[in-house]
Length: 254
Image (cartoon, rainbow, N blue to C red; front, side, top):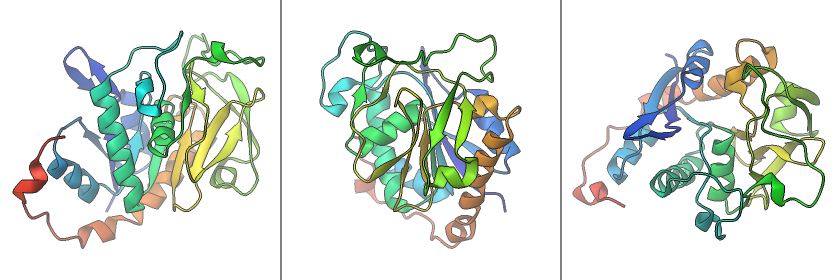
């Protein structure tokens, strides 16, 4: 049976929750069953998400509310949505407890970092050192922008090798790295490009957008394929899990 992958919504357009199609297609073509997980304020439904899914994908999107990582807004900080931030950070923490495979992309990696107690640099213009332009202006999103350098002994090195060209669509970067997270790749300007949780079977965050490069890059297909392979190992485990028993206390909102 194919693994069920929970894709957490990217954000809102007016009153519509959405996920960009590239994420759905990358999961589908890699052999997973994509399930879009909307924002809800119910502990019971969050529990169902954790029970049903064999792996989880956090997507790109807008900025995270700075108060959630102990800062006030600074010049360059973009659009935020507190309800979405709280939902994603809460869900991220619960997913990490399960040990189920987790793949976090761009904003998703930043959510992962904040959930682990890390912080975000609100805009690259706040850096004192010379910095690459990480918001590429290319015609197509699958075009390469800059190199990343992958560290030895990391999960990412196993899948992608030592050096790789990636695309780039972000103006914020990780600042303080969260507890138990290991930096597994950086750009030439020392921007953190990937992190992973070494104690976890597969908890990986990347700053670029592999879903946009899926059709043109064998390395990105390898990355998604490895994620799906890990998630497959949870399928039988989920099949043996008892059905959720309703508890009125579990359905309270937060």
